[in-house]
Length: 251
Ligand code: FPP
Image (cartoon, rainbow, N blue to C red; front, side, top):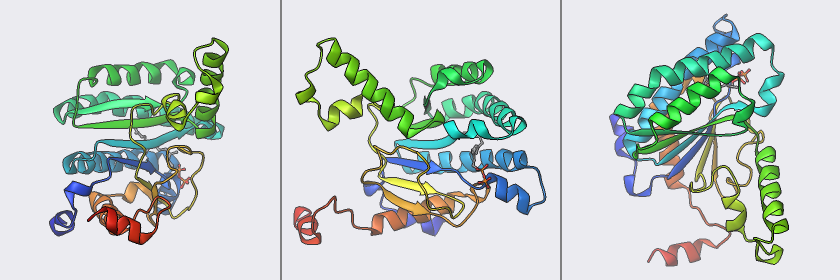
């Protein structure tokens, strides 16, 4: 394990890693257990990923914890997920403060059950001065929702005469998103073998490297993060340019 870590070039870390944590239900089924057993074990993987990323020096990690579409799951599962969220945040605040990790959230938080909303706000408030890494939970999040919200906000600014439609740039738009101020994720990881984006950070992943891991989320360990980062560092990110241009620009 130590060997794998030593293969990482810490000078070339992705600043922001986004993760679609998928496969909790299938993992539970494989073990003959109810779905919530998978979510509980998913929390262990969240801890592993967070600790490993922070230790390496990654600055932002965004986890897709609950999508807008997830409300459509059986009521008992939604309740269990919301309870787990409250318990996890309350339990982990101390460790986050000890490790200098800041908690943030993106999504339509106003629609969360009041207990979850309160625990989340307490976590955000209590960790707001931490600087080592920001852990962003995407909760009741959907990228299309976020994009519509950004459009509404820019349209309103235009109506109020604060912005000229012709002066709208990519930066204007990025500032209107809930990820304002964060670098775009250079790396997106999805577990469970599914190869979809599922309405996650559509604008922000325009140039992200995508990694699909054939393991269920509760099986995710720090070695998976190390290996994914090593693979990321071995890929050439061209941003639409040619290989020669990239090589020459590094000379
Ligand atoms: C996807 O697996 C997982 C989720 C929808 C929830 C993720 C939640 C956690 C890991 C626990 C709480 C997290 C935090 C940050 C406190 P799935 O249920 O879609 O699995 P399946 O595709 O196999 O059914």
